[in-house]
Image 1 (cartoon, rainbow, N blue to C red):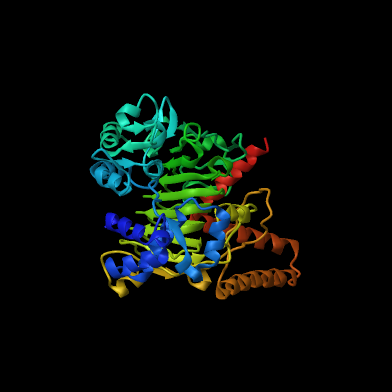
Image 2 (image 1 turned 90 degrees about the vertical axis):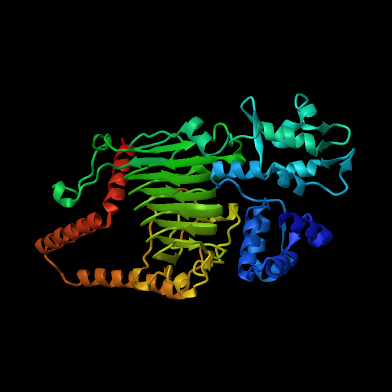
Length: 497
């Protein structure tokens, strides 16, 4: 199908190659491949998001989606960063001949052998890279080296590669990614785990430990010192920023348990993978390339602006707060997502009890970060879900998610001081949700006024204060927020010393 699509697109000249117009793609997807139009548009939009368009152009594109027929994308772009590496290697190895044939130009032919042009090699470089003496290079750069040219079939005269010799050379050296997840875990830099202290970059890393229920510790509201946390299973936070090119930055959070973690500058424009993290609060207040959240439980994750996709797989009782270009969900249970996204959320199979809500918080650099990744704050499709899977049962599909009830919708405060111009949530929100927040604030103001009018004596005020603090402590423990609060208190004390 890909080969047929490439041939058909080239036959359409400017409407199909080197950039594929939506008109041509819709005809192929809907009339030839029997896709629904919403699925065809979703795939087209996904490839657009993953292409290297300037962020200014991307903003303008999302703000003018009504004219989607005139929109074009780069035909050869796709994102492989989030795929399982072993499966990806196996797929490329098994289909290498077909992949290379897709890149052959019909007129590029010499001495009974097809030729690969430099443009074709640049396109292949999106899928395959390499490393020479610890230096990351493109496949074209490596294959053109004088020490490799005779083996890879490179001709300096024509600046082309012999398909047959290049295929043999590439298959000989094909291996796992040198900048992928496993390479990051094995060779990356482990970020400092200084409990209750700020890192040199100004980011905050705070940790919790074995949080007990109220009956197990008599004074559960009092903050703990760093000695209380030495027995915690802290997990790992590992980055490849010191070895990888900026386009392939990756930060991996593995088995973070019962901690509050805040990172900003250290994860700027990095891909992020969060794996098997439990009972934690993770703040990543930075522009991010993509985020993969897998097999996490009872964790709240607050993301900055995500340039491409937030993907959640096999998570339970997880809350994600994000501005992103796309959200993909697979096999998640009892999870909540607060979103600002210009794309319809995609629910694959296996999701149950998913709750969706509009984005409801901010931090001082939010507007700047959204602009950096090309996200329009005024365009939000958070509740317009697309279902993709083998079933076409509309009842089953619609029962896998729900929109948050208005009486459950509450503001979320990010409790950190940062420099920046954003003073309020810039993202579009439905009027009924805005009214729910306004009514809640009005009710709190009315309660404060009521108390002020009671003219209570000092002893009554003391009793009321004690009662409210007790109820608040019970709520912190029952809701699990005591873990986050104690981590923040610990960090605050350490920062002042």
